[in-house]
Image (tube, rainbow, N blue to C red; front, side):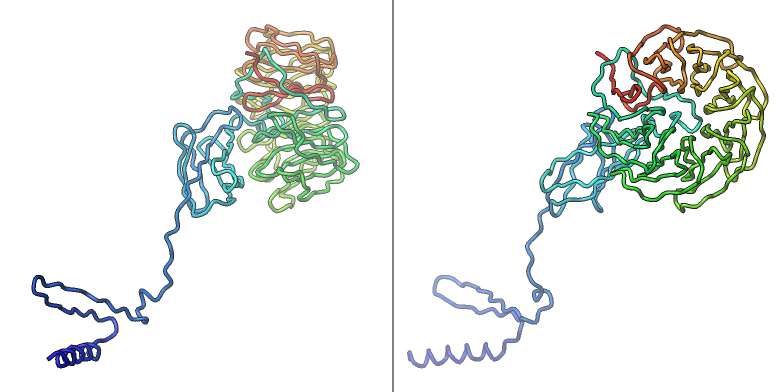
Length: 481
């Protein structure tokens, strides 16, 4: 019986094998005296479309941490949108955001919040999975001569005033006639020899220098997007890359340009010695329009609404249509206009060098008042809170009531004042040829600063830090605690 049993088992197995098909599941039952056990045997076809693909292990995401900090105030920024590739999140109350990445590597990382300019930097998360990105509040920057397009020479958002403490200083090799402009923690400033320097606002380190050929410069640059726009007395407009000072392109006018840039929707508008006013499109590198005024221009352009205001050596204030340069109206003052008009609260304030005066018009061209000083007025005025401030070659720094020109206070500086006045945090500043900067409380007329370095322009700055301008050196100062 034993051989017969083996034969029956073998036949059963053979029958089971012949009846199987790929992918089928068969159940065989083996009986014992005590228990019945069911065993399932799975056979998988090599042609199965699901299991035919290579088996991949799950990829783990690695979270990286980005801390968003206000670059000027060093405070952490809550609610900033941080984006790495296609992933983004908002920073918490501590300015921190965690974002999962499939691998830690170098990524372009951007951060932005309402009131701040978007900033994009490359962060190396492999080396630093916890990194920091600094963003900058738009209202705390000083991106052009005069602080704004109206050339008010007033920066209302900066909250820093004397007493000061010097945190660093930097020599620039030759005369500084016009102030630095500041954007995203970097100051850009030119000297009389035509060299533009980029300075780190935190420590004064020179990030880059760009000398212009046959250089001579008597204007401030302007920052537009990732570019620095520079006007030269050699008759060129130089457009540099902000990150490293590399020349991107230049435009040749052929006449000295003493007018500082004002950039309006990507168009740089400026005057020149040959009497022309040019609107140069920085995107297309082409002239949008040009007006021939016939008289030498050193004044910069001020913009209010859709009207441009500029003075010339014929003693005229020209009001032009911003879109095409068409003349809206013109008015005369009592001498050449060297400095730049300031526009505020429906009034235009125009300095006259040979006329020795400051004249006020309405923005529609109506004469309002004139204040004579008996000496050259090269100084461009500053306007803030219904007051106008300017200096004269007689060495006097004036504060007038904007509505009627009445004198509110005046101070002798000990030397001629040639550069523009400026107002920051309720303090009016003037530099003089007595080699000092005077700071006066704008409302009370009380002197709050006498800084032992100065010459032409007094101050610019950003965030919690001001730049005081000496003859050939800038001083970064903060509020003394």
